[in-house]
Length: 339
Image (cartoon, rainbow, N blue to C red; front, side, top):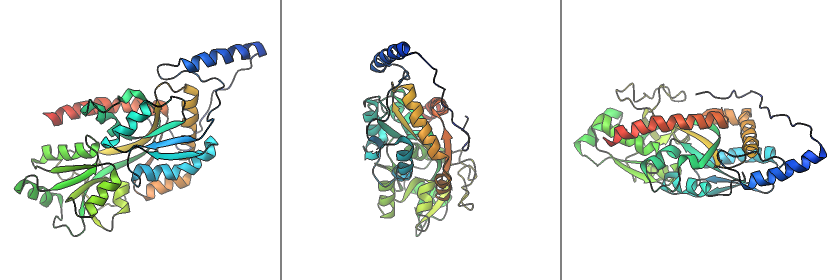
């Protein structure tokens, strides 16, 4: 997997000089191409984009990490795209409702949707009724990564993962864990932890990270699974039992990884944006350029790191290749969990 350099230059193909007659002919061909685009998207020629306000669709409830990052990006996107960017919400089914709606949108680039990975890959894989297929949307960029951690409240009787899992084994189903959505990496993390440990846990899904955290902090679940940016936000109220990453979390170096504790469990969440398949290539490049410019902004990078996530800058090609890799990897993992 390759990640675009944060400070690298982004280049746009140079336009060729053409005659007046050729320009007229090209305009006619463009109108036909835009009306009949197929596959990954055709050339949009001289299509003016954007021609109106843009919608940044968040497939979760307001207040979670996807919403917070979109609002941080919003003013810079408006600067680079020259139009107002309206953040809208379509929560439900662990993101599937929002992705299904985006897949049915007009492929003109004026609606783009937040994508959380591997949720976006897992939903149609585990739920045939998800309402979309992964290849119904085309990746524009991937801009962020965050590992998942298992948290209990500060006053919890469980001081470490061993005590937590021992209690779950002694009273199967008595230990509840909140998380964002069903058939998401949070849910899959809980299922895999059950399989690896032999404990029986009760996973409780919510429409996004914010309501899952609220329920947990309110005492409605024993624990929660949350990404590192959520962990940092609530670090004064919680105890992190383990991080599902290859290495320890830099901002909490005393917290062990699941691997250190004997459980081969890696679970990270990547965030990006996608558009409906068939969106013209030139429009995808325009959005890609705007998002990559946002990700080169030092204040954006510093804020992400400070809040516990890793800034990425995968362009459309890199992001699409990465999604294909995830599909292959998670199919194997899902088959293992189902056994």
